[in-house]
Length: 381
Image 1 (cartoon, rainbow, N blue to C red):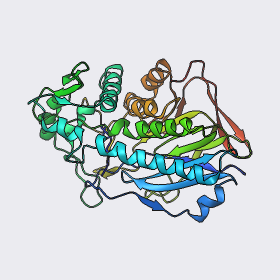
Image 2 (image 1 turned 90 degrees about the vertical axis):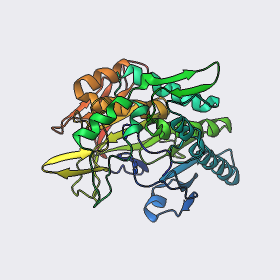
Image 3 (image 1 turned 30 degrees about the horizontal axis):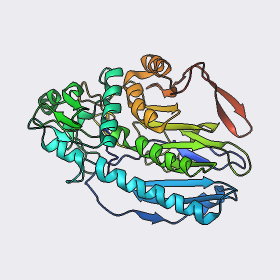
């Protein structure tokens, strides 16, 4: 597996408008995999959604299907394909240094040296860790990269489901404390103070990678497109027809438990935004009437119960990825307040299945279904 292991262990159809279905993050927590990127064939359904002029490719990287789709009438198809190849190469590079699954990655080295000595890191990893620690501080520990100390104690694999015992949780929780991550910018080092601590950047890695690919495309002057990592997406510009991109916010309680009948709650028509979703639907099991899922509250070690799904809307993908779990853990009331305070629009679905929207998000019934309109009274971050 690549970097897509969440630190908190860590979605309808519009007439004539292809859409991105943003459901829950497809975050696998199975065995590590260093399988090379695999180019996936275009499905007939996906191809039918494309407008003429969209140049797209999907590859499996970090165990996730990544789609990069570009639109620019002033550039030839060969150039756009070359830019996509460059973006895919960047994703593989990010996985090589950010993944805690790869034995020779700097993150793995930081974990090995916990309680022993600081590890020298480059500016990219330093920045990723600093962003994570800043969110940990803002959220009061709802987001915590040191939660990786729990890795291996949870399993969502069908037939081998497992949740740690109360004793295991009590024994491991002392290792979860973002304040014990010591960053020395002058020396360019990171040190975990307590032996047995582990960090994992999966809780922000997907968003980070999306933004880095976006930066590449903007540097090439690509007019429009999207980067879709199954659980997060960033869009810019407009489609060849001049229409906005359409992102579907998925129903966290589909008609079939195996997700074979996904439905859309809302369609958001937008550009120049990023979106991420956290939810309890794809990685979970039920035992004795209780639902155990992969969004864990780092302060307790147990599955968070404040929400069943949160979709965040931001300017950057990494920020959406950082805050969606924090809002989820807080629940509709505190989560809404936290989102607005920090420049995030959000759709929060409460345990009773009621929908809570942040200020500036409104729902209107259209001929294409329920549509979300975005006009927050605060600046998106």
